[in-house]
Amino acid sequence: MEKAINSLALSVLLLILFFSSSSAIAVNYNVLSLGAKPDGITDSTRAFLAAWTKACTSAAATTIYVPPGRFLLRNVVFQGQCKNNDISIRIDGTLVAPADYHVIGNSGNWLFFEHVNGVSIYGGVLDGQGAGLWACKKSGNKGCPSGATTLGFSNSNNIVINGLTSLNSQMFHIVFNRCHNVKVQGVRISASGNSPNTDGIHVQTSSDVTILNSRIGTGDDCVSIGPGATNLWIENVACGPGHGISIGSLGKDLQEPGVQNVTVKGVTFTGTENGVRIKSWGRPSTGFARNILFQHSLMINVQNPIVIDQNYCPDNNSCPGQASGVKISDVTYEDIHGTSATEVGIKFDCSSKNPCSGISLEDVKLTYKNQPAEASCSHADGSASGLVQPTSCLQL
Image (cartoon, rainbow, N blue to C red):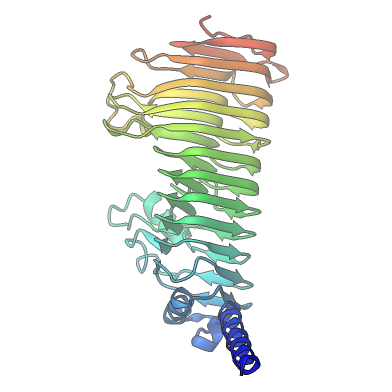
């Protein structure tokens, strides 16, 4: 009798183990099986949403697969919370936005993930087809849509983007807002050098974001770092064309979170408007930028290789004309070298109310037409060590 009970118990245990392990097996969804058409003409939005719904409601880890081909999508919101924290989207094809920029131009985002955890995107091309909208904006037509961000994440954690290509976004290419633990690696971002507001990667109100081994060329910042960004690591990025890597603009609002603990290293800037830049509006603000390291970077014919601009006002339009309330401190420039396209290779234009402090130049060498570039400093305190060219103008 005892042996029979033990045998029954063992059988029940094996069944439990079998079903529990079966439920853990990853599930795969091919968008073709849900009605997507790889012809670049048929609207595949519903098929992609159906794949997301299945993946999000699955208790097991899930992969959404996009095979080769061009898949036309309107604006899509991939909404969480999901039942699992392991959704992979593997793309061998191209997702293409509607050719008529009005279709998604006022939606804010083309592909948008919200309240998700553990989403990974591998490979693929996102074609925002933004050239038509850029032309509309340049024509002075006031009826142009504002434009859509190609790929946005909001209130999301544990995000991976690996090997993705983003082309010709209407506006920003990739945006992270209120996200934590993000890794972007091996991405290629490309738009015309005169395309407006096509920032490559924008990070704001987010923490622990890493950007590695990527090539970014746009009409705006390669990487822009907004208020509330903390613990960022940017390394081995090729930037150009574009406006460089920028912290800011900061201080647009009176009550604003600061930026801190940012490392930018191993970046090559080619023909960009700026190299490493911190910018803030000239108006009162509680914002700040501190504990910033710019390291081991090469400037190739960059107009403003090293710049802090606390009187930021693009196109000199509606400039506040006040002293910036943003406090900039503990910023280190180490092993920055190369060529400036203008005479002034280093410009620190800091706030008269909150002077920059703790600015450190270490082994900086910038030339203009084979001669040492010049430096310009206003309301900046700090130190210089090692070979510094141009000679530091910091107020010691």
